[in-house]
Length: 97
Image (cartoon, rainbow, N blue to C red; front, side, top):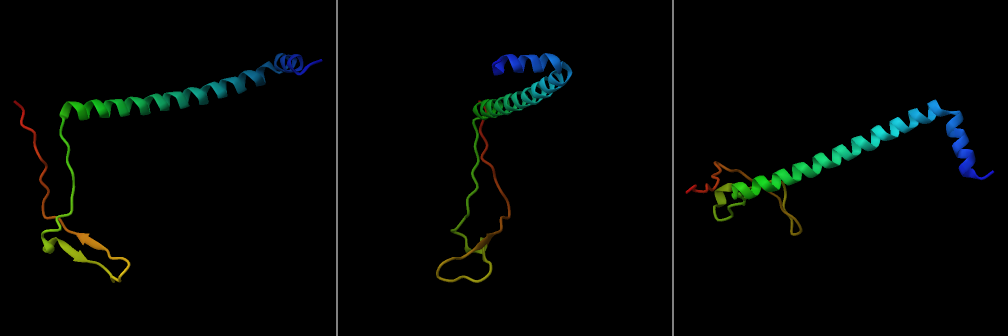
């Protein structure tokens, strides 16, 4: 008797256990597919929103003003670290015509 016939007879003999295992596997696969589709939909919605708004903003360190730069810790010839303090941020606005 080959393994396919034996597997079929086992599933028929233990139909309740097989049905429970099938339902659990179905629930896990369905949950994974729903999660992936929500992830894809959120990426698509974010891309559409960015396209509709058309605005972007960028944060940069203003190195021209030394008052904004505060040295932290020790600096040696290999590394240095800085803390930047911002007094205000201005976001560019897009004029709607």
